[in-house]
Image 1 (cartoon, rainbow, N blue to C red):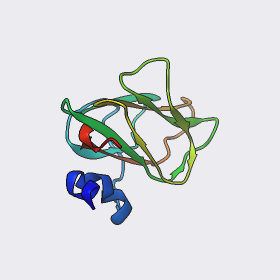
Image 2 (image 1 turned 90 degrees about the vertical axis):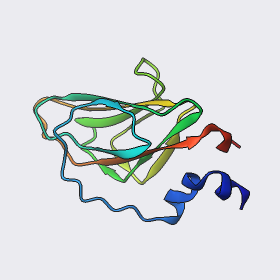
Image 3 (image 1 turned 90 degrees about the horizontal axis):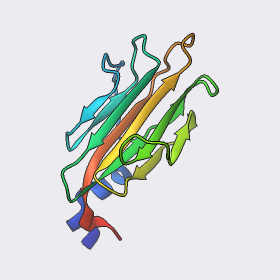
Image 4 (image 1 turned 45 degrees about the vertical axis):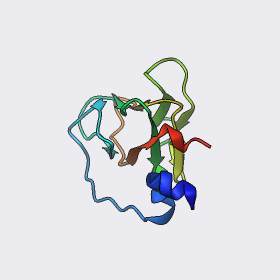
Length: 135
């Protein structure tokens, strides 16, 4: 309908099965400015990784958290609306697919694990939608 015409990305995840064969990343955090992309698990020694996703003004960040199977109590993914800070709206270690939309063009994702625990795999998909898609 009209929303689909205005915001084709809004329907991408509901109509497309996204498969990933990502095997881990050497990047522990950073600033991501692409219109869409993946955050995959970090396979190095660091125990805290923070990624800041920043879209162009007039866009909002949408994050799809694919099913997680992290070891609760030893590792988790945290999602913050906006820049890194004390307030979060998601801290999760397992479950089904979730989709979160930021209230602005910035979202922060943090992966943390205990130093003695090996990193589990995870994949997160992010993309931008125009702010005019707000309902």
